[in-house]
Structure formats: structure tokens, C-alpha cells
Amino acid sequence: MSRPEIRVSGLHKSFGDNHVLRGIDLEIGQGEVVCVIGPSGSGKSTLLRCVNLLEEPSKGQVFVGGTELTDPDVDIDAVRRRIGMVFQQFNLFPHLTVTENLTLPQRRVLRRGKAEAAKVAAQNLARVGLAEKADAYPSSLSGGQQQRVAIARALAMGPEVMLFDEPTSALDPELVGDVLAVMRMLADEGMTMMVVTHEMTFAREVADRVVFMDGGVIVEDGAPERVIGAPQHERTRHFLSRLLDPAMAQVEEETSDQVGKSG
Amino acid sequence: MADTETTPLQPKRKGLTRRQKRSISRGIQYAVFVAAVIAFGVTADWGRLQNQFAQVDIAERMFPEVITLALKNTVLYTVTGFGVGLALGMVIALMRLSSVGPYRWLAGVYIEIFRGLPALLIFIFIGVAVPLAFPGTEIIGGTYGKVALALGLVAAAYMAETIRAGIQAVPKGQMEAARSLGFSPGRAMVSIIIPQAFRIILPPLTNELVLLFKDSSLVLFLGVTLEERELSKYGRDLASQTANSTPILVAGLCYLLITIPLGFVVRRMEAKAQEAVK
Image 1 (cartoon, helix red, strand yellow):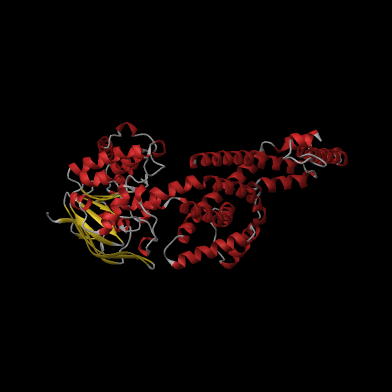
Image 2 (cartoon, each protein chain N blue to C red; image 1 turned 90 degrees about the horizontal axis):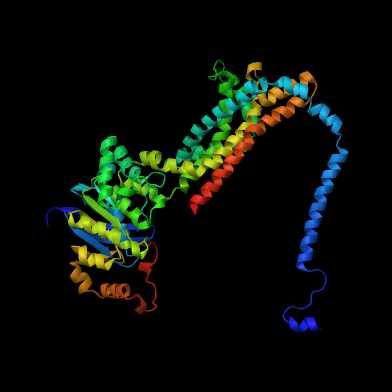
């Protein structure tokens, strides 16, 4: 592994009394694709949101591309330009067309000229297979198309790292494939990716590493065939069995770790 | 006997059925309405009313000045007041949402005070108290400036609350998406949040415009020149000149000329917004 593109050390995050992250250490190398899995409430989304400081860590450090984001003097807007983020709910700007969704951030944030922004937008829309939707408004697109536009919007900023926060969880099942295909293409192109997901097939086939989180800590971290194929910990086995065969799950008591903020 | 056998679950009703009750109730409502119209038509002295309010020759004498001067001034006062109110309201709304405590507090105090006072008092305050307190200061634009300021101060309090609600109605994910793309908080607010907030609050803002349109009649408490008169003042002046109330009626119709189409536009926008939510 070359210089780590993302490095998280000793990360803690609390929401009031709710201690969501309890000491996370994680490194992601350049070009690596890491899938983070775990039950809801395990803190995986919070961890992802801490990586671009959408959540302010309570303790610990986050580095992306050698810059410490947790340094109070860092220009967070400048760092975020290098980190693309894709949300569960897409979060496209509904008052703008697809093309404007891609060009406005480039022009306002990167100060690109009109022609250049339009060119980059067209390139990235073509990459996600939505060139013909350039003039549509987000509300007229399917969920899968909206999510692909959201990916294109992030890519248009030329990020070095892409974060995905359950990108397919809000989609109808038949639309999941198109979004995963785009993510697979990015992975093949060598993008550094951190993906919070429930898509085990994607994790197994595309990820270089799978991280299993539970109760605010990393329980298991390794190659997908090991973590998913032959989990070492009981908690991982339990989670995977419930995920792969939900109909077999027993009714059980919620532990206090799982109560509270989801993700 | 045969009845109860075929429908054993429905006990035989005594008195009126539901349908009968409903038609009687509706009949009473119509009767009251007709009676009220007849009573009004019979008791009102139509001859005197027409004499006092509908003298065609007096109405004719008001044109074109009622439009070119009075209505023009009313619109001018309203639009400038609305502009001042919008700008000030935006500032106060952002102060209300600020992370700096004193700003929030100050904005809250402003809204409570100016929402709680009658617009009339604000006009008197601008017309009398300000020149007294700051002798020698001139409000830019003379009467026009004073009206814009007074109407703006009143409107800003209402608009600030509307704008704040609109900003808060934009989903949180929009700000997060903008920030994750590298927008600064201020730039995200201007480029992403506020344009969406305005689409949400366009109907209530237009309503505010209708209210201001009517409040512009309070100008007469500032003391205006002949050239600065708006609809209400113009109508009253003419009414006392001619000793007839027809000018009041014409002035009133001129208000409706603007407010009814505006109200129609608001309802259209609300219906559209409702559709967009679906």
C-alpha cells in the first residue's frame, strides 16, 4: 500500500450522551476501494461523514491526502473540493437542471469558466450514461438516474477520493444495478473509494477490503473473501447471517448500542 | 312487520331520515340567504346611495388623474416599501438564523416590536419622531423615502419570519451537499438555499404585497403634497371637494383592480406548489 489517502486515528464522536464512534483507526490507500458494513446504528455513516467533516469529530484525527482535516486552521472548503460525497438521498439541487447541477459548483467553487464547466459536465454525464438527460430537472428522473447525476456532480469537481453513504439504499431494487455499475467503473479506473453499503455482492466483487463495524468500533477489517466469506468474529457472522437470510432471524432484545441515530 | 323481517339489522327509525334532515338544513340556509338579500334590498335607500356613491359625472371627472397620479403613487409606495421590506427582512431572517447569539436576539426583538405595533404608529413615528430626534436629517427621497421606510419597517418583520421559515423548509441535505462540494456556508446559502427558499415562500410574500398595497393608504398621516397623493387620500380629497362619496367608490375599485388579480396569482402559485410537493 502506498501513502494512505485517508487516515483516521483515535476517532471518537458523541451526540450528547450517545457515544457513536468509540475509537476508530483506519487507513485507506490510494486507489483502494473499502466497503464499510455493519448493522444500523453501528456508526458507519457517522464515520464516513467525519471523513469530510460533515460531522465534527469529538476526538481524534482525520487526514485526507496528507492534509489534517481536524486541524482547526485548515481551509475545510478547499479540502472538501478534493473529496466527492454521494448521499443516500441524492441531494441534487431541485431548482437546477442536470447540467446546472454539475456546472454551478464548478463555476462558484472552482471558478471555472462557462465553457470549461459545460465541457466537464458533459464529459461526466456521458461517463454515468446520462448525456441525454442534460436539460432535464432532477424531479423528472428516476432514483437511479438521480444518483448517477449526483455521482457525476461529485466527479466534475475532480476529486481524489469518493465517499458513498449508502448510495443504493433509497433506490427501488431494479434501479440499484445501474448505480453499482457506475461505482464499479470508478473502482476500475483507480478511484480511491470509501463505501458504506448493504450491497454484499458489490462488496465481495469490487472492494479491496471490507470493514465490519458494530457498536462504534471496527470489529473486523480485511479482504472481502475473509470478512464476508469466513468471518472471524461471532458479531460479524451474526450480522451476515441476518443480512443474507433475513427470514431466519429471531426476535431479540435491542442492545443499548443499537438504539439512537441510524447509520 | 314485514319491514323488520327483511332488514333485521336496521331497526325502524323514528322521525326523519338522514337525507330528510340534510335537505331541510340546506333549505333553511337558502331561506336565510334569500331573506337577507331581500331585507337589504328593501331597507337600503337605493336612490340616496346612488346619489352619494355613483355619480357618473363625478367619476368621469376623476379620470385620468385617478390612474396616472393616485394609482401610480399607490403602486410606487407599495413597490418601494416592498423592496425595502424584502431587503431588510432578508437581513433579519439571516440574523435570526445566525450562530451569533446577540444577532438572533436583536432580530427577535425587532420582529416582536414591529409585528406588534399598528402600521399607523410606525408612520407617525417616521413622520414626527424621527425629524424631532434627529433635527436636520432628511430621509432620502422626501415623502417617497419616508413611505418606503415606514412600509418597509413594518413589512420586514413579517417577511423576516416568512423567509426564515422558507430557509428552514429547505431539506438539510441541500446544505450538506453544497458544503461537501466545497461551497462556503455563505455561498451555499446564496447559490443553493435561498433560491429554493424563495420558491417556497413566493405565495406568502405575494400576500404580503397585497397587505402593503392597502397599508400604503396610511401615507396621508405623513402629510403629502398634491402630487404625492395616493388612492385613499386622493379619493377623500375629491369627496370633500365635491361633497359626494363617488370618488371613494372609484378609489376602492382601483384597489380591487390590483388586489384581486394578485390574489388570483397567489392561489395559482399555491396550487402549483401543492402539486410540486406530490
